[in-house]
Picture 1: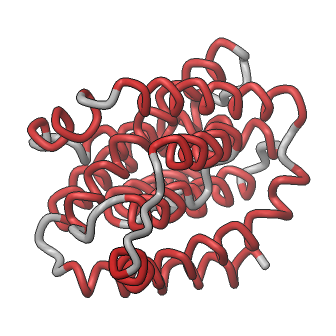
Picture 2 (picture 1 turned 45 degrees about the vertical axis):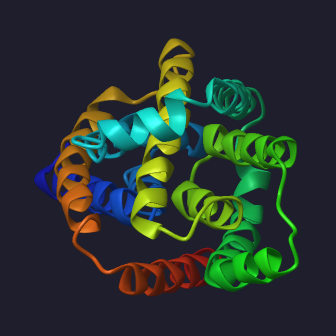
Length: 246
């Protein structure tokens, strides 16, 4: 592996970890970079999931209070998310990702538009006394987790869109929950991909190092960015990803 390839993979990991910690979508940096160095799609997808895992996990440092309140108090939510993530990772190993890659732009477009309209939708539902029940929310989170285990590109955007509709209006708080759920999905997928022999470990190590640094930096930046600016950046990111993969 030459220096150019090493720099490409490490740089993609840095951007991916940074992006995941703030808004999601880091796979759109790491997955194309792994394809560019010659890995087949399924191997690139599995390797990307393994490599960016620390970017999700590192962004949770110092957020123990929020995690205890939002996740540990809801074991059912964690169980549904874990099982669906495992199913998605298994599907990737069994079926490949060619068809799903064609659907990614449409899924991201839907998620971006939903996230942009989330606050207005919440206010509209509140005025009319309408709310999304726990069963519907669990089903929706299961679908997102299935996607996250299968491919994961834009998982953070999808999670924030869902949490905006089913949660409160505190974007910084929702960002922590998003990172926690993304970490759970990625952790389970990593175990399945590793035991399934689908990971290219040398490229994964380079992206891993970059993603670790990016996750720490992004986690700190996310706590300092104003919610309005963060929301605008996420919407712009989502549209950019749709354009890139359309």
